[in-house]
Image (cartoon, rainbow, N blue to C red; front, side, top):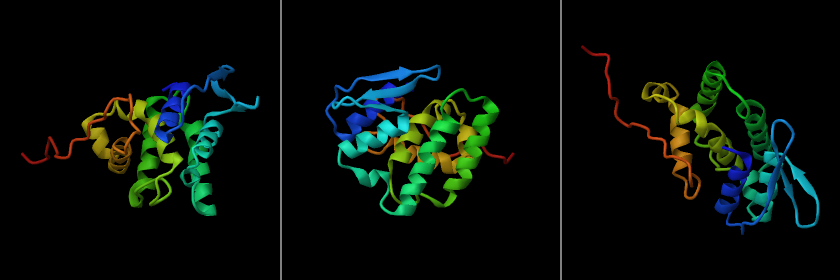
Length: 174
């Protein structure tokens, strides 16, 4: 999803009035926002954190020092590992690692929904939507987390609903 669309979705979900104009710079099309007081903010996670603060929902950035660090870690992960071109093998490794990480967690920070969950959901959607039923079952923790986030009120918006089958369609029995 293009960063401008993603940031507009985030604005809408946060309850902010629209009208912000997003640009892009450079070969990688890094998002840029011109603020009302003339400053330019550059980068998806920088602009997203700014929008969260504008909406007075700073709890989405983490409540404790540790949680804030974990949110920042996943925001960096989003930009460095998920954005840009990813081959099939890179996606497989990414999903395998994320699946292990989410084994004992509801959200990326543990038990609190944060901006990291929102931006990772937006970033992963293009990969998850193309997974087969078997692949979704292989990455069961990612599937559980993704399904939970896509049903969080107001998050999915224009993105297609990814279907997760709750009953196995095949068995190993003969």
